[in-house]
Image (cartoon, rainbow, N blue to C red; front, side, top):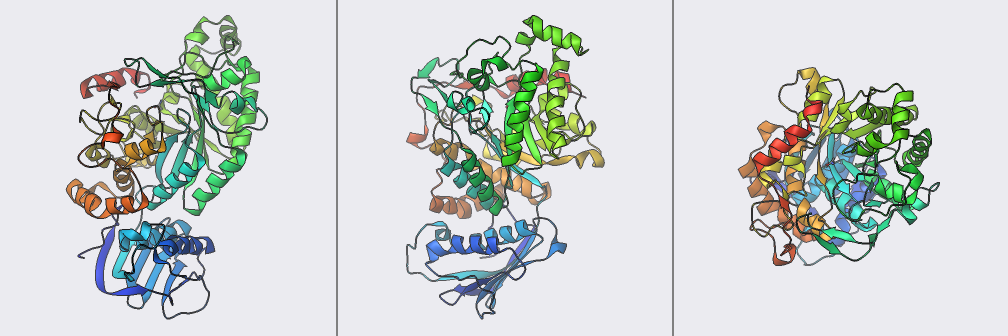
Length: 544
Ligand code: ACM
């Protein structure tokens, strides 16, 4: 081996002579490093090796040693393996953990299996790896609202994120089509809002319906487990409760939250519901309570409040909403949306957290401290950074992993433009045209998995991988360290065998397997030119 074939690619890595055998005498010690990371490493190495690998304080001839070395910096690590042992130093707990992940990747792919499958001996090849991330926000968003992802699958997805050194899981917990988190004070949010009678299949053009109820939600204990499992793996879970649009499931549960107060059902079609929240003080109060329960469950610095795609037609046509706009001295419905966001943001800020919203929130005034997810291309990133807000980049044409992976005619339910592996790999969260100070506002980026067309965990695997491997590397390494051909070779030769061992049903290089296709569903593919023109119109209001 000329150099270790890790993914994401480390800043520096080289092979050195010798190897470190793993055997019955091998121990793990963690002087000064977190016991949870040592325990995690033991649990990661034991099943496939069948070795005991005790975690001990005692000096041993044959040890994997984990230590903290703060001067390395956040999430950075140094790994050295050779005949005398393996030494992993981390700048912090996350760094030690990533050193452990690197150690797994130095071993053959069968290390990822859940049991021993051969009598071959285990040895860590000699290597020196020095590594640190480019960005602090390396994320993925799971839309568990359109299709619920069972808790065990969320835990597995977190494991896969951690393997790729992704550290932020944005959970899109509510939408028109479902409410997925238990709120003790308002049980109908999940009793009523947690399921729908039927689901649209494909796009509007397809005009197909699956007449089978869909639902599910996470109890508060499920959420505590998800958050703790993620934290043990260096992953922060950022929750999102989407308001004041994308709220039909909440309105179905509590009609008094809606503009018309009519009894609605949880939406069964995709797209954006015309039914939005009303702007009464009582509705703000309701969501203050919801966010309080959310903040008690999720310790993240950022709390998502959506803010995207809020149609203003109901507000325009509703005399009571017009009265509220006049009473509050607001100019129009856009100002009312800002009023709504500002009220929630103030409540979140009072509890020491910051709100995180989609780039539509730039259509009005925003309080300081808000972070903006730029999704309609990079216009939101540029505007937010210039206005002094922090940015998480997730431009749809590069990292919306629900978009089709190629022009292959068998891609399942093709929507929008192709986002190929190369497109995802070319992602750079920092847009052109910013000063250094503005560029420093870019916290990082994330890939988004909208789940309208991912009705099973198998399809989440298909859409996510291998493109998420490319995004992970784009967020870890600077552009000068990235070379697509080299990445592809490393991915296909060294990394996909790891995913095979885990059982990830990624998209094969040659196209979908027969059971990954969806024959007869047209979807809504778009050309790049049409898509660009469409997005340019949509972001006109936030262009700076
Ligand atoms: C979004 O894709 N509506 C944020």
